[in-house]
Structures are given as structure tokens and as C-alpha cells.
Length: 248
Ligand code: NAD
Ligand code: ZN
Image 1 (spheres, rainbow, N blue to C red):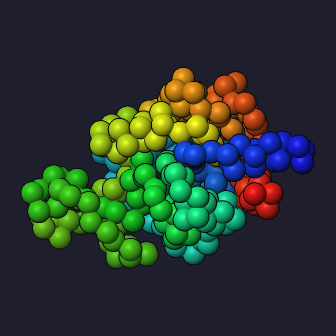
Image 2 (spheres, helix red, strand yellow):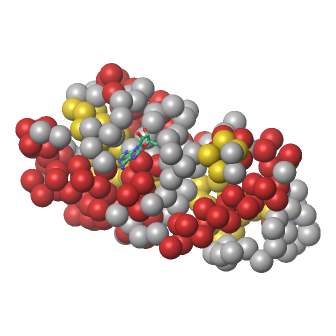
């Protein structure tokens, strides 16, 4: 990033009355958590898209849970990085700042981000796969490693599933509406560390653009959102956000 780009982005952030931030797996990369698209997207030679799906779970629930158990262990031992801490402080100190995340790792929350909209659920939540009445709603389960693989529903003895939105599944309509409103109402929209190919999350970027927001992208690689971004910072999220924050 040239110092000019950081200064321009800092100016846009400073002036924003409503700043909406969309984050993806890239913000947690500096915490050691692999993204899906890129190195680490394969586990035991299986694609993340196969594991994170109802079909994958139906085929082999134990394998899918082994993968989640491994990720949960990695996430538990990870720490929020500067991208998380800078964004958390912005939400606390800059009224009108909101974060929408596709991440399920909980690192934004651990850094103190508030408000936050979690589009894809939480890796720390589970619910009954069978759909029994008592186990239908998500509950929190922090155990690492899980005692049994695959874990069982305490209510009906059936399988439980991770409380995340899998590929091919719909988002909670209320959560999606909240995110859509935040994209439409902001004057500056920051897309950070997302490949912008997973819908409907990716659609928030053009939605914000159409609603008149200035789009800023922070990502070491070009993405589907790059074309509509006014400013593009090709740097890791932790470095870029620390540099912008220092200029505010
Ligand atoms: P993705 O894996 O599709 O893309 C990651 C993006 O991050 C890429 O564009 C890559 O260039 C960029 N990136 C890599 N290192 C970066 C860095 N240091 N700084 C900034 N950007 C960096 O991830 P996605 O767009 O979030 O979408 C895929 C789905 O994967 C989401 O639904 C999400 O729930 C899930 N996911 C979540 C986590 C997590 O919770 N940490 C991790 C992997 C995948
Ligand atoms: Zn049950």
C-alpha cells in the first residue's frame, strides 16, 4: 500500500457518518486460521465446500465433526490480531460503525466488537440434526476436544450439527435483513479479507455501491468485488488496518 492510499482511506473512514465493514476469513488469517480459498482450504484432501455442507454431513458425520473439532481447537488457541482489535475499537469509539462477518470463529467478539452481525453462525454453537423439539434451537458448546465424535443430542440421542450456515443453506432472514440495511445505509463500506464469491454475503458489496457508498477493499488478492471498489489496498488486513488506524 502506498502511504497515499492509506491516507485516503483514513480520510474516508474519518468522514464517514455510517461505516459498515464486511469481513471474511482473511481477517483471521494473521491469527493462524486458514481461509477456505487458499492454502489450508484442504483438510485430509477433502475440500472445505464438501465438509461444510448438509450432503457432506449426511455422507460422513464423523469426518465432518473431526474437521470441526480440529478447527475449534485451532480457534480456541488463536488470539485476535490487529485487524480484529482495530475494528473492535472503531465500533466502540466511532458511532455508526458496524461489522458484518462471514466468520464463525468468534474472534471479532473476543476482541470486543459491538455491534456485530454474524451472517454464518458460530463454530461454538450446535443444534440437533434430527430436529427434536428440545434441541432445535442453537446452544453453546465450548468443549475442545469433543468427548464423542460425532457428538450426540442430550435430548434425543440423535446427531448434533454445528450451528453454522453451510454451503447451500439459507441465512436467517432477520440477520440478512439487518446486514442488507447496514449496507444500504452506510456512506463508507469496507470489504476486508473476503473472496466475495459466497452469496448472499458477497451481494452486500454491490448493494452498498448502488446505495451510494464508497467501497474500499482490503485484500492481498484481487476479488470479484475489486472492480467496484474506489480504493483497493493489497495488503494483509492486520497491517492495512493498523496503518489506517494510525492515521486517524
Ligand atoms: P474465503 O476463504 O473464500 O476467502 C478468503 C479471502 O481472504 C481471499 O480473498 C484471500 O485473498 C483473503 N486473504 C487471505 N489472507 C488475507 C489477509 N492476511 N488479509 C486480508 N485478506 C486475506 O473466505 P470468505 O470470503 O470469508 O468466504 C468463505 C466462507 O468461509 C464463509 O462463509 C466463512 O464462514 C467461512 N470461513 C470462515 C473462517 C473463519 O471463521 N475464520 C475460516 C474459513 C472459512
Ligand atoms: Zn435432539
